[in-house]
Length: 79
Image: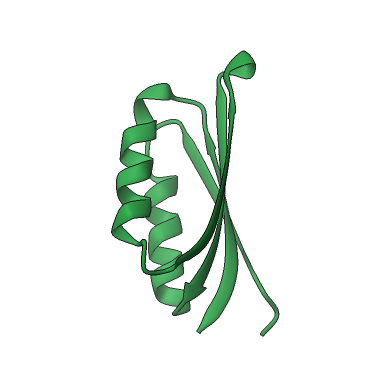
């Protein structure tokens, strides 16, 4: 089991629904969520704190990063 943060940057308003669907799909991994809509710069930022097997966390981050107008980055804790 690993703990990680996933930073998600959404530049395409039409991608928000798909991002939320994937977060819902992996809801069992999520232990915290912080969202910041930045309407002025057309950028939505979501930070997730997740806990689970590294392969599941990587799969979630990969699916998020494959959405048009979305960039995701995962940082793992040392342990």
